[in-house]
Amino acid sequence: MSRPTPRLVPAALGPLVALALVGCGSSSPSASQLQARATPICKLAARRMSAIPAPTLPSGGARFLSQGIAALGPELAQLRRLGSAGDYGDALGATAAELHALRSTLRGLRAGNDPVVAIKTLAQELSPIEVRADGDWHSLGVPACASL
Image 1 (tube, one colour):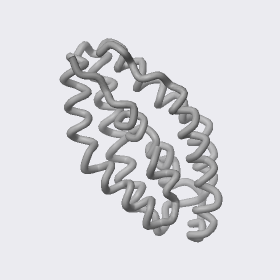
Image 2 (cartoon, helix red, strand yellow):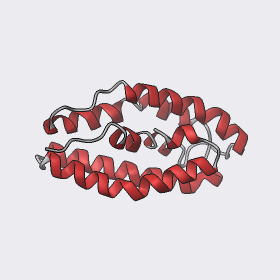
Image 3 (cartoon, one colour):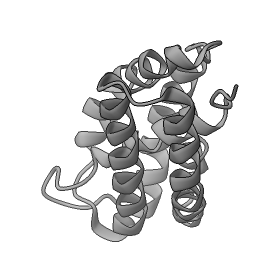
């Protein structure tokens, strides 16, 4: 029986924090402003998500994903105030793809999909997206958002 690894699912949830940057505000922050403002927000999100225990049974996958998504509320609100996407659109695009995959998996689990198959499929789908998102956030100098 397989279960999500502690790094995989929380790491996939974390970049969803940055999705809030899409289309919000009227101007783009500079690179240094983005780094200074987003880093503490993402670090807080990482601490909150790391406090969510990984499920010990496959049946806990939906609850785990749901808790992870719910834990990001305050961080999303803060990141919305940073400004529009500007030069970090690539990172946000990867984040949007991760968010889509997570929400889709959660919907499937709630609809009764096999949790083992769902989590394995999610892991395969997220792997290349995470690599891209991590690279994008690192290139922007915001590794805290990549490691979520």
